[in-house]
Figure (cartoon, one colour):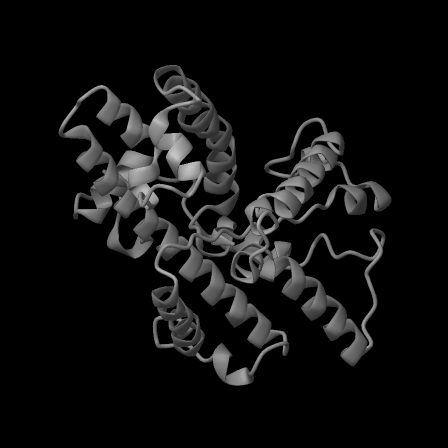
Length: 281
């Protein structure tokens, strides 16, 4: 989604995709290993949280914070909580951006009210943004809840049906389609069982907190097809070109030397690159 507003989408998005594996390995896998070494599975604080006997929520229930308290490090738990706040704020910005752009695109395609396609002079879909921004206020009803949403699009079968070599794309995934199968199976497993606490003992509140989207998404998808009489698109009919000629023309009009990360940071604080003119911006 961010590729639609990136200056050099084929360069920057490709680089961003590649760094995902390193970041996951470093921050999640290695981080989980490290915290698992210093915090035992039968830690009293963790057991109390799992049994519902502890009032700790959010950052206070983090294994990292528990580890630091067990090691009697006074300052680090507060630093971790502060970092968690910045992470949540960043995630909120990302989700707001994605939701706004999704609603805006739906309006352009006639799948949402046309007024949501209106933008400001700078291209901000203001009405779609206002609609999206209204929903976060619902969070005040359940301050302790967390939510996540994952959306994946798989084009392997379409490329195979139309005889398109995926290596001709700026970025392609290795080990396909097997990685996609494993990913789909893992996501189905998570979506079905990550709200298991709602069943023992049964809780209507927890059930809808964890499974609302799993119920709403199929209803919206099948409901749209039933009302409008649309059909599922086969891999041979899927449009793999779409707006690619426009992107090609756009990138052809840009300078041949895309800025690096640090050059972008310098430009944000007013430091121009050597040989860069204001007209190039």
